[in-house]
Amino acid sequence: MAVTCGAEGIQLDGELLSGDGGSAWVDAVPAPSVVDQTGAGDAFVGTLTARMVLGDSLAAAARFGAAAASLVVGGKGGTGFIPTFDQTRAHALRVSEGELSSHA
Image (cartoon, rainbow, N blue to C red; front, side, top):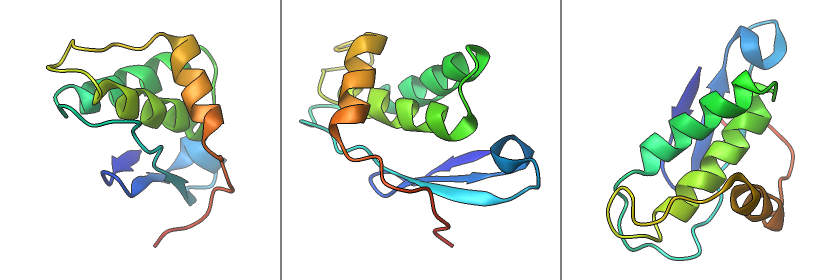
């Protein structure tokens, strides 16, 4: 399970994370600019789902989802800017990934 906490980050919980029902925190990826927040949640969920289907871990998929969402808010409306995965990956890697940790 992933619970988004806006500009703070994402709380991850459950079997998909560590196999033992643990939890971890993924820091938010700061947006280069914010024009309109429409579509940020859809970008997060869509990217997270696609990356998990492609074999990424929950934590890695959540990181890419956060990066995609932070890029989407730079466009106007839900389809004002839809980043490619190359753009999303570059944005996720540009910001320090840090360690996953408990945020509770």
